[in-house]
Image (cartoon, rainbow, N blue to C red; front, side, top):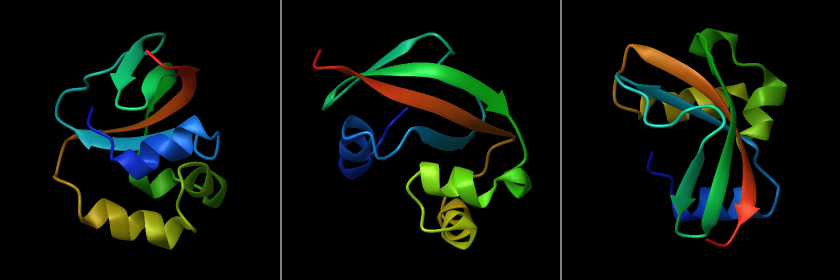
Length: 94
């Protein structure tokens, strides 16, 4: 799972603890970790869902201003049949 540097910094700072992904095949599992440019992330939970079910609170937890900003971001993503809500946390430098 590729994450942009600014998003990684927000996760590290505790400002973001939720990521949304649309893909054909998941590359992370709940309970696993992900090595990134800023350190190790914990993959706490993964839920399949519809993008239509994303709430204002979830959009803000993911670093978006609101659901409208989330939807604009979603429109720029590659299509995929699977949409997931992924809870993450920063574990430390790897």
